Image 1 (tube, rainbow, N blue to C red):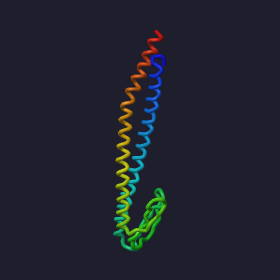
Image 2: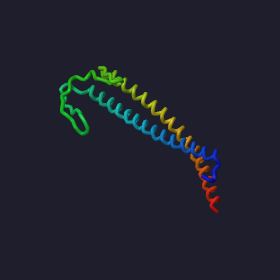
Image 3: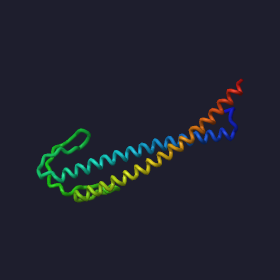
Image 4: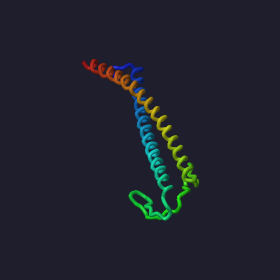
Length: 151
């Protein structure tokens, strides 16, 4: 770019690379927040289902989901214990109330992670807001220099 000195060209390249890095980071963080939000929603639905199942009488007809839009009929037993994935592929049998407490704690941890990631995303966006005008000023200078050189 004829309108820029060598050090300005290098700075423009560095700023442009940082802008792309920040944009990619913001997009990644947004996807993470979305995934965590979905997990929090699923946990909330599970907790609600467990609360309702505690009240189900034995031998009640249930429809058990086995996949998207697919259910099988089943009859309930006394539901006082459930299997809960506690991480690393380990499933533990817990009383329903303990399972609810465990899931609520997990949901709180995920919400805290969402808050932390959200703050990181805001920092990256703020850095973008500072970098873009700096890049644009260098691009404008380069364009003005090229226009003046061709006259």
